[in-house]
Length: 204
Image 1 (spheres, rainbow, N blue to C red):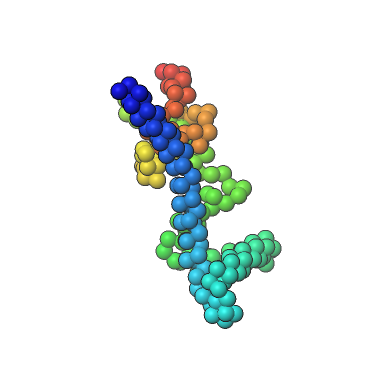
Image 2: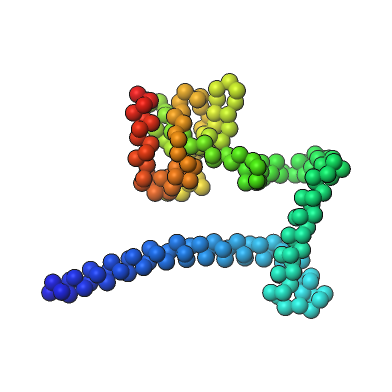
């Protein structure tokens, strides 16, 4: 009986170990698949046009479309680096695109991921509310010169949701940890957050 129980435990342990080894790889492949499908859908008008005109297969038309889009991005990026290109982009954006609902919000959001810009979630903090005994993990997303800050407090285990809270800097504890580690703690519902406790002791 003990041998049977031991065998079941061993099989269960091996199965669980294999499952949690494969799970991150499967999720990563799923994300890649979603990104590819999204990109293919975005260039589908171009690929369908190329497929019909040049009588190419669907895969070849998609690959050619991706190449053309990449070349277009490079060309536009090259143009807007020139004085004339900057002037043209600024005026077209001012008189046309900014009139479109949601354009400014999307532009500001995408700009956070542009190389050379400081990411909005690069400053992890602990936010103290009311009694000072409870602290929330968050990230400074904006601040003013007169001492006010906007802090995004993500929810666990779904950090895509959360609360944007306007507060003063004296309610914040700036922690010396990486944004990735703070977000990992949020995703893990507080797991591996013991490094934050020392900051709470210092604030008392």
